Length: 352
Image 1 (spheres, one colour):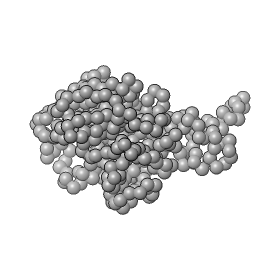
Image 2 (cartoon, helix red, strand yellow; image 1 turned 90 degrees about the vertical axis):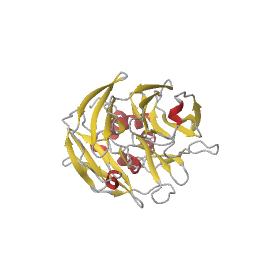
Image 3 (cartoon, helix red, strand yellow; image 1 turned 135 degrees about the horizontal axis):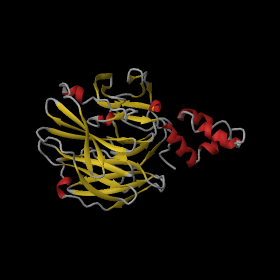
Image 4 (tube, rainbow, N blue to C red; image 1 turned 180 degrees about the vertical axis):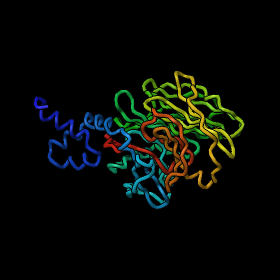
C-alpha cells in the first residue's frame, strides 16, 4: 500500500463511500470535485454500491414519498425517511416504471411526462420534448431502462397508438430520442395484451406480453440493447386454467421468472432462462387468499431462502424457498407496483 500513489489510494477509498457521503465529499476541494465527477469514478462507485446492504425500498403514498432500508435480521422495513420530490407533481401522481443502478424512470400521470430521477442525489431529467417524445400512457406503453456497451444509459419506449406500434430510444449521452424498427404480430398491438416493464439482464431487455383473459396468449419479447434487434421467445409452460402473470427478475445476471397462475388461490413457479428455453427451478405452495384491496398494495421480495410478501406496512407472510443464490432482495411483482421500487443508492446522474 505504501508504494501506491496517493491519488490511487484516495480513489479506492472514495469509491467505497456511501452515495450521500460522496456528494458531501465534492465540497472538500476542487481536485476531489473533479475526481468524483468523472464517469470512471461514477461507474466504479456504482459497481461497488450494488450490494444488499445498500438496497432501499421507495414507497409513494398519496401525499408523501419515503425511503426505507431493509433490515437483514428480520427481513422487514427499517425506519423511513421522507424524500421530497424535486419536480412539480400532484397527489398520487408519480408512477415508477423502471429502475436501474439507482436511477428511476417515472411518469407524471397528470402530464404523461417521463423523467429520469435519482432519489439519492435528488437530480432529475425531463425526457419529454416539444415533438411529443417522452410521453407515457398507462396500459398502452411499456418502458425499459438499460445500459449499452458504451456505458450509455438509455430508455426504450414502446408506444401503442390507434393500432400502431412505435419504438423509440432515448440516449442520456446525446439527450435525444430516435425511432427504431420493430415488427411484431398485429394482435400484440391490441389493448387486450398487457406489456410489462422491461427487465435488463445480460445485455438484453425482456418484456412479458400477456393476454388479459383465461387461456390467452403469453410470450416474452427480447430486445438486444447493442444490436437493437427484437425477437420473441416462448413463455414457460404454465397451466392456462386461470389468470397468468409472469414477473421477470435479474438475479446475478441470470433471468428468472415468477410465473403465477390461478384465480382465488395463486400458484407460483420459479423458472430460469437457459438460452431461449425455460427450466423450472421450484414450485411454491399456493398463496393464501388475499383481499383485492390488499393485493393491489403488495410488493414481493426474494432473499436468502425466503419469499416475502410485503405491503406498505411491512411483512405479510413468508414462504420458505431454499434458494441460496438469492443473496439480495429482488422485487418480484410489478402488479400495481407503480408506487414502489427496490433500488440501490448510487451517484449515477440522470443527465450528462
